[in-house]
Length: 293
Length: 292
Image 1: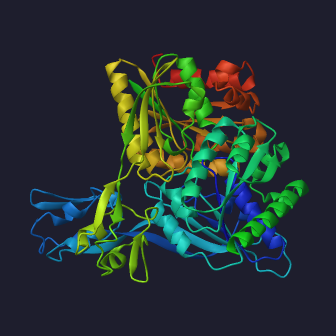
Image 2: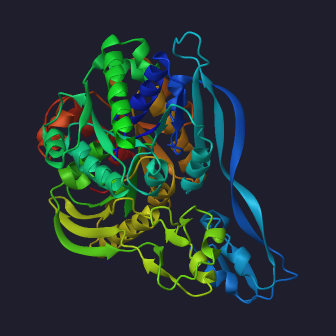
Image 3: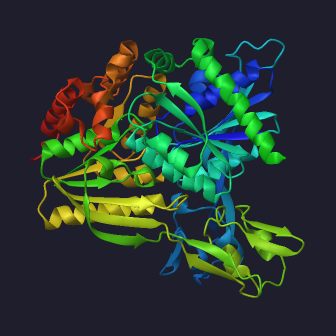
């Protein structure tokens, strides 16, 4: 089962829910994997402190021009939709940071003057986390992608991370905030999406956007309300109106905020929170089973 | 004219609450909400929209089933897994399409069209504190970086034409295309962080990015009293990196209550956070020599 944790608004508690949902599943005897697709600012490793056992780079294939073969016909510039290659006077200019690696110029060049060369845009690390006591188990599987600094495009790194996700009975995917291409690339083949929000006007506004995005992808979504008890009733009213299920409410708690700020797995230290996560896990499992039937 | 961009790396650290308060305190400036895929500034600035314009940032491949000869060239060439085939019927998944146009270019029967995306809208509005440029990216919209560039460009034009001295930009979380588009060429960044391991981790990435573009960085720690030890670690980082500390803000429920009222914190409250934000603004305006 693949469960994506998304939110629209940043800082609502996606990583908190994702990390602890992976942890509680492990504690309950599942083979659990945590995957961090928030490659611009991956934070799951801060809490899960994984032992990394494999690393690989993510590259984007960018064009390299053979000046001997090139006759400056301009076909490469014509096919490129991203302004990453252009023929100006007699020379071909390549802008690697704009290149999406589609291969268009490479295929279109009538002279065979273009080859592709891998350009590093990020990396992926995988390993296991032993932060949760789970007797007789081999730790929580861990994968995260890291976008290199100064790189604009997160999606190629997210795609590469997704390809590495193993088949497992419980996979929790931490999505980037927002509702744009990075978020879509992360959640699009999930079995279920949990939208984490907070009961405020900002939280509600971005929840509506995120919900619409997920609905357009035809994926079932449920809501987790974090910091419940603060703010207003807008999120509850929206969910009731749209028929979206609220699967869990995490109360506003200074203790939880402090455990989070230290970078610890919260289910290890707060029983109330652990039971909310256990309940959430069971509900998500049931919803996915019902969907698959 | 000076342009200050508020960013954070990590989401939810209080960028927008601080931006709205700054606008109120500045009184007369141009604001731009560049967090286009989760724009919130309009919720606390009561903008009156004067002009709305559609935004199309890219294209999507659309296959005409009637013309398709079933040769499979598109499936072979697409690097984004957007083309699928079942029983000889080819389909393009628009949510996976990158808009590169390779399939359309090579389709031997020209069955594929590249159609303009409707990615969203952008607005020029009036607020009590001067003009505001903001936008709405459609669900799952591509090209948020392009939309950010457009919003910022409009804000600059309005500032120039109206002789405004300050542009205040509310940025998006992360370090990718919308953030890069938000900060390039700006005079300074105010990085708003929070005292947590995640907040510090993400601050470091944002500071690294700003360093690459040679942009001056001021730092503010929001909710600093949640974890004083972590606040010390943030201060240590700021000192070691020779960044400027612009201020710190107490955790205060009034920040949430102001949002519920659709107001900025300083407009709504005289509490601790409001007074901290006033001081943060004084420090920032003084340090950057903002003419307000």
